[in-house]
Image (cartoon, rainbow, N blue to C red; front, side, top):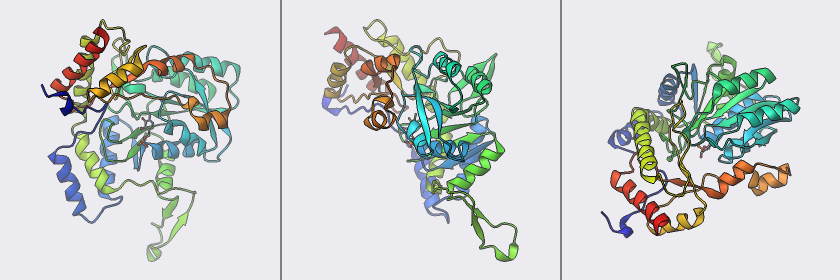
Amino acid sequence: MKSVMQYKIPYGKQTIDDADLNAVVETLKSDFLTQGPKVVEFEKQIAEYCGAKYAVACSSGTAALHMSYRVLNLKLEEKKVLTTSLSFSATTNAMLYCNLTPEFVDIDPQNYCISIEAIEEKLKSDHENYIGISLVHFAGLPVDMKRIKEIADKYNLWVVEDACHALGAELSYDNKISKIGSSEFSSCSTFSFHPVKHITTGEGGVITTNDDALYEKLMLLRSHGIKKNSEEKDELWKQDLIELGFNYRMPDINAALGISQLNKLDGFILKRNEIAKLYDQELTGLPLVLPKSNGSKHKHAYHLYVILTEKRKDLYHFLREKGIFTQVHYVPIHQMTLYKETLGQNLNLKNTDYYYERCLSLPIYPKLSREEQSYVISNVRRFFQD
Ligand SMILES: Cc1ncc(COP(=O)(O)O)c(C=O)c1O
């Protein structure tokens, strides 16, 4: 065992090996630094991995959300989107960029994802002003997408899956597996490749979809909204601006890293599940709530391992002093000043608020060694037993 001073354990971090380094160096020596053949290859592999027809790589998970909402509200109509407040603010900031207003729905205390019952309740009383549902597979545990799709179809709503926590997670219906990102039950899914996520490209994101028209528009929006001339062979320089787009391209350097990381994704998910299992075993019996995901028939991707405790603040500081840097995911979006001021909603999100007062994310990432995890476990135990 190391001494306390030698431990510095974050809640999450990237796993980079020599193959990743070589992939990046190779690309740096190539003709393409910004978007090029590596991006095309990465997109093909992500689409295949998830089981979707298309993947559009971009500069971040936020850009992926922004483009998704933009394409799904091309006319920039003032509409409402049912969503969760328990997410990183990008989930709903990207709506505001597109004239969309998030309508927060409480979480389900069983899985911390958006409550499907609460969605149904809202839509029963008023569905005219809603255009879509945007959900988060929180911590990596899939939302019941079949039910979501039934509701969305009934009320003619689109669905965006913010799947930034859930690359590698799987839905299972009647023994049929559907990967998160297959977008089988939604218009599109978005992922982030920030270093704490399942695989990283430094910064980066991707959208997966099966919709031809949506794909065409996303490709356009990613690069300014410009369509290059491919027909008039004698005027190849010609281009036209079709939509007001963005520069949300992913550089080939990042895509090369993504391709190399993707080879290891299944191993990373396995490791995350092993770490979660050990926490489940070793922390049972303490006065805290463990993730209630064991009963789920769907496969968890364990981006986060969240416990709930009445002594969250004290535990956070106790562990910090020991070199263990836990995190709170998240301060709910509806409690943020910007949202309080702009939406002015008088929200009753009691399950979300209850969760927020108690949640703490313990370290979970593929490189977390058994020794480091034992150190975390023994300190959590010590905190409650002293
Ligand atoms: C649920 C969720 N949505 C969106 C994002 C935004 O992704 P990015 O940081 O790549 O822009 C994140 C990343 O932190 C996230 O966790």
